[in-house]
Length: 479
Image (cartoon, rainbow, N blue to C red; front, side):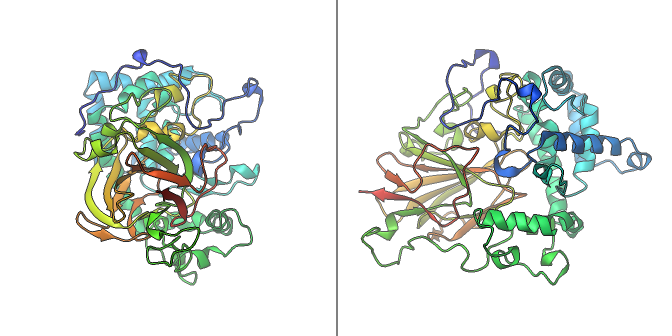
């Protein structure tokens, strides 16, 4: 499954003294006595109130106990995945142990709803029959939101255990589980998923989506003025849940900062040196002097270019350069745009893991303060292990030169589609692809010697950052 050859050392070999380069909230000492709202799930893929997630999981488990559940036709891909696990003693042990181990650890939300792999399979069978839900629960207000990662919500604690860490890194597990996700993706792209849009198109949800698109401006345009849709039609004219999630902006909503043919100004004397945001996203971090090979599994999660770029022959040209990483919101725009003009010299879709998080962010390595919405705090790490799409661009301006962009799938948000091809010439601001079923994170990698003057200089606080608009100014390259 993997083209890369580097293996991940056993967790027992990992040093744990280094720290993340970006801000990560740590739990207060009196966490057990506080309401479970200390963390804001990055990207809003899950509600801020952990009990709301647990209630949702418990309700799904209850549904599996009803008589009509037993009469459902089993999904062939889930049957194949379950058979793979149950027929292999090692996989079976790991699969069950990750639920056993998660229930033994301190859990600030109470006892986990799922305690066995069999229960997970039952709940999974229900999840893939419907679209990710948006629910309205006004008490407390922060419980209102969506379960944008339904499977991830179920695996949040188990995937971070010692057993879960090993299980979700195995190529055969991910290859089989890809079939489950592909089946669900086909459903989400079909008219049968339209009914799942009712919550997403409610008054409260549309207001929430518009507020995010307006970057917090409550007085900005409404949803129908921001996105292409038809409010007079049922489901606003969206043909499927995925059609809604890859919705496009109305013309003029995201103008290109300094198009290449713009007249020079004192501030921007050469518009071709202006780099724009490739995604509607919030900044995570900037890393300089990145290495060809590095220990990406460490607590500090350094970037390993060879692993991230799947051993592409051009990788050596970026060694010593700069990585900019930013993350997407479940409520945002999920299409990608070219940050510079240039020639597409390569495109690659890389299979990878779906539910792997950094060892030191899960229950195994951080039992007192695990990531409450994994793998949010593992984004640099998953750039090396997750399913991802990679595009290489030779910029028209030689001062920028060769660059790469890695669009990273996170959990079930792993569908990457490019709409340009190798050999195409692309223009700054041009749409080049999209995440299906949402979005997650992306990295832009520049050659050494490219002097980047950031509009929003690092460091960033990932728990409070707002989106930078797609096509807006990201950085200017200095001479």
